[in-house]
Image (tube, rainbow, N blue to C red; front, side, top):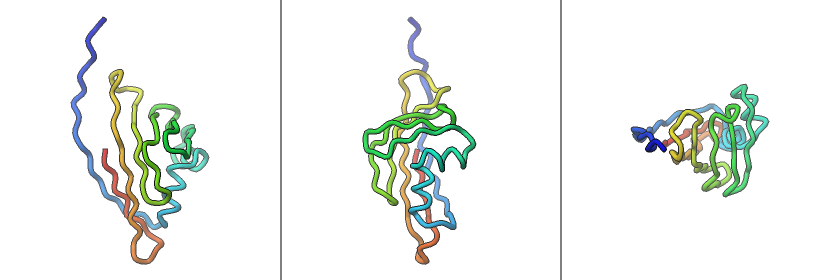
Length: 109
């Protein structure tokens, strides 16, 4: 058996703003139908903590570690082209803007 291939990793921290309320962004990320419509790929997303998901035609899959509706999504991410047994933790944190119709999304991977 070959030893597991080592994967170089680094933290990605990105903040973006959307002209949509936090509930809209959360809904898109956690709805199989809405996520699939946005990305053009199949999505199967559990809305429960500990539930599994697969997005982008199964290229990314994992488990919901923490879900705070309209505020936080923490998931494990496993990508099809990553070495076996490698997983990452992704954190989406939603910050409502003052007008309530915009959201700042912080993505840490």
